[in-house]
Image 1 (cartoon, rainbow, N blue to C red):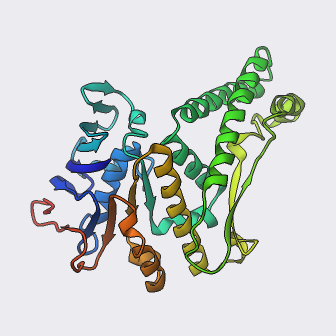
Image 2: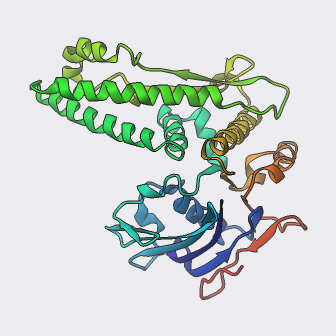
Image 3: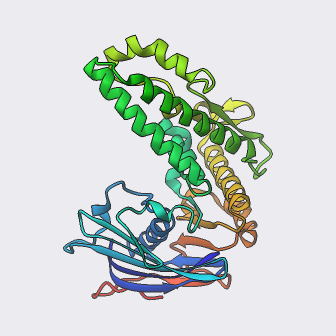
Length: 343
């Protein structure tokens, strides 16, 4: 399973560009502000249906243009698949092997991917929302039923919150039953994921994950009933999978509170490698592994630890401002007056 080629039109700073990729290591290099991360963002969009830098698709349209278009060829299960996505400022369109969709969600699982960027430090220092997003995206790429239950849970909770705010509780029980049913699946999947994420020993310090469940899924229905009166005043559901959290511990202590910046970066690198390992086992083929500005994320010692593992990671994409030596397939990004990238 690998990404064979990618065509971009009106995407970020690219007017038009086409790239072919190696099945193993791909090094995307060039000066700053030339479009290295933009290319990685396009790859990630094809793989997951979302950007890792913005939640607004309009940000991806080249300045002065009205749409962007991406076309990818993916080799999977001995079959070459064609993926086309476009966005015109209002409407999404995905064409996957002649089937057309108005959402990018069907991309999930087509090209399972793991991404490591300097901004992933937010998985330690940021809000619980960032960590839940990490859990959800990982599970969504390998478990379609998880996507179903997550969407079902959010839909039911939205309806429950509307009834709480209106203080009209007729019919609220059916939404709570639906929430409780899906919450049980969501929490179980997250717990299994945490148990299976074996963090590699990049350093001698012991690193581990701790999952905090907001509500016991076995008694969640009763808890929703118990909390109704208080939550009517708030107009919100205060417990459930949408409040779960994840912590990284280093030598038994919360990394968020006690770890140095170097320790945090190492812990995130270990987490991403563990994520790749689990995703690869779940889908039965090597997932894509993407590193945005590996040099900016880690010091030289930790870079070397990561680089020593690259040969075992299947198809890999790395962005760097440094011209590579002999290893891998080199993609030089530069923009001339016509803003055309050259491979």
